[in-house]
Length: 154
Image (cartoon, rainbow, N blue to C red; front, side, top):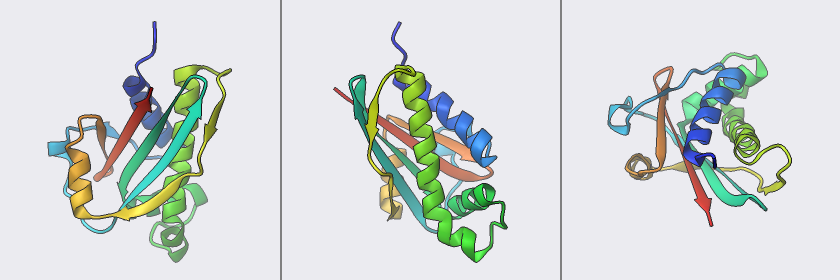
């Protein structure tokens, strides 16, 4: 029986966020996500191999990414260093989720090439558009709205 990619990414996303970032996401309908203020970031990574290809995007508030950085580095979330490392923390989280997803989805012997994760700020309009996507997996963790989008390609 083939594994459903959306189920696998959902399980992996939650597991990695809990174990690596000490954030505990709850799957939440987009309409019930807490309103977000401040800057929002989008990180993306693309993968390709004999078992398939696709792309994963994470959308998250920059302030949450700052907390990720603080948790990774063992520093205070409101420190200057945590603020400067916030985009890198989101990229690292995405990299961990992608690696775990590919192993769980395609098996340990499958070989994939990954792009270097990228990150960019997004507008409030882009954030709103993401929430309307049928493939958007929406979560709430510590009052932060987080969205994960997996697109598998033929």
